[in-house]
Image 1 (tube, rainbow, N blue to C red):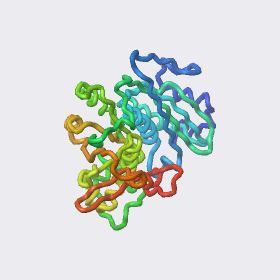
Image 2 (image 1 turned 90 degrees about the vertical axis):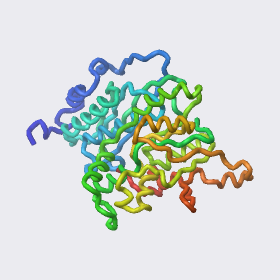
Image 3 (image 1 turned 45 degrees about the horizontal axis):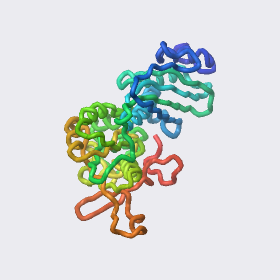
Image 4 (image 1 turned 120 degrees about the horizontal axis):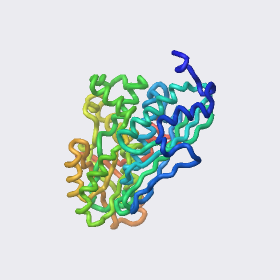
Length: 357
């Protein structure tokens, strides 16, 4: 390392660090105690916050600093996409040890800037503080036309469940990065290995879906739509959408969006588990009328599929029986498998299977 690369935060202090980080920000906005943003008329403010913690969401074994920055931004932009919102700006709260290398921080911000350059928005402020554990907390700000927002509670009986992208790729990438590939599994091809690792390190927030939905809006007659991002797992998103809407969700086992090659590599049981519960794929799960669901899938090409449908609870059963009905299940020939949230990643749960990244 040369002298610049070996500098630590303790060597330059807060002012010196901020002077470097301003290069990644919108210079027309930063510099005061708060940012002043112009706001489009007739739109609603959308705000989301996501926190990434060293040892929980990232580690030097799985994610280089540029990837951490990208993933931190992508996680927030995915939440905006799930609300139907367009990114406008982000603020960054950064907590770091004093012995953290300056080039690590600049690479982190480089990843953030790369993601924003591709998907929209700018860094307009934040805060820096000292901590024993590296933490990246991002607040993202977006906007949406009020009657075009997507919300979890808007699903209706008969809606098709549309899932963008593949699920399980990030979990497979994590296993490869941790050298925790199942011993009985087949080694993936070089192409699959590269794709799965990239899915974990550089996920794509599905903001492209919003533009396609806008094209379908004239056919909706102002009907609200339900959506959620799948960062905590496909099963988690499906269950939460069903619960919020007072419905049940039925998925078809042969349509689960597994990555190409995963089934052959790890077998059906593990491939299905990673697809349903692996998490951190940052795709979208949407509930749409069947004809519009088909139109959306067609417009998105091979990056979306109809995987199930929303159904009403069995109103003929007594209240106790309704309570016992599963919220969601997977249907296979001759078999029904209830699914839930317990196997997905939960910060304060006790049944985490995939583990933190």
